[in-house]
Image 1 (cartoon, helix red, strand yellow):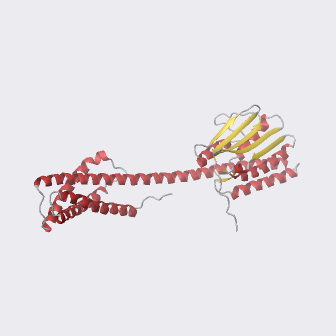
Image 2: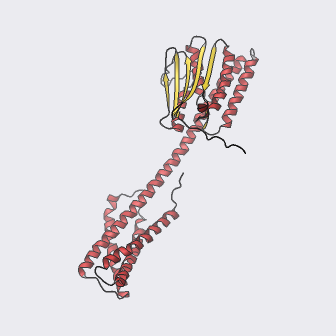
Image 3: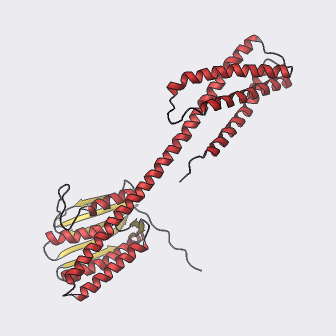
Amino acid sequence: MVEPASPRTRRRLFWQLQVGGWLLAIPFFTGIVMVVFSDPATALKVGVVRQFAGFIVTLGLWRIYRRWPAARFELAQRAWQIVLCCIAATGIDFLLGEAGRNLLSLPSLPETVLRGSLFLRFAVFGAWSALYFVIRQELESRETELRLARVEAVNREAELQLLRAQMNPHFIFNALNTIVAEAEENSAAVIATTHAVADYLRYSLSHRAHRAPLGDELDAMANYLRVERTHLGEQQFNWQITAAADARAALTPTAFVQPLIENAVKYGLRTSPPPLQLRVTATVLGNELSVVVENSGRWIQRRPGEETADSTGIGLANVRRRLVLLCGENARLDITSPDGFVRIEARLPLLTAEPPAESK
């Protein structure tokens, strides 16, 4: 993230614009003066004297304007003060110009030209003031945006950590229930479940970032589904995971398929005639990744705020929220109910990890 401009950087920018602007003004005003004085040397001296006076006067304006708080600055309230400052600056500029002219023994301007010069100088100081406030407000606006972006980034990071912390214990809780249920009668299921938990924790801890290749999570969830089939019986639960190589390589939010599979197993067992059918399919469709989790049975609509003994309802809500946070507003989660099945499809922009460099 770009750092806000420091006071030192802002001062340096002011001096660059201040010096450069008045230096560029010398040839312009010298050309105007040459209409009155045909001698180029005299016109140049007058031009230099007048722009040096303008340089000094605008430093005084800067000292005044910088004391006005930028956060509470309103042009409508300060307009009359700015006009008075420009009038005073025009008078001081005239006195300094006359002092310089007398010092260098330069000829005086005709009265009509002098009056026009006073009006022009007032316009110059007005333009200088407008430019000063425009640049200052632009810098303040950018710094405010950067501060808000920092706050948003911190809040988003905290929210993502919280959502992941909610998800991981949810998986472990289900696995431990299986271990407890099978501890006395099915030691093979206990061993398999323990390995599944270990594999999942290894997967979770090895992906500390918020995104990881989809194939890694699918492999971890395959172990979990093997445990579930062992627990339920070969004839009670059939599952299949199908993912092409390009889909497995796609980067997705970590632990985002897991709650979809957990919901499919849990609610599928309640509503599906045996055997429960579960299919997970991942495909790449153009610039999008599609992950579909289907289970036999029917959709159970939970009432707002409803909680059950084995569910707090955070699974699908967390998936939706994480997809938006990590993948943008185009990511979505669609739930449909084709005949005899519940189908949940996650669509998110395709993002693929860079392939590892080949070792020589």
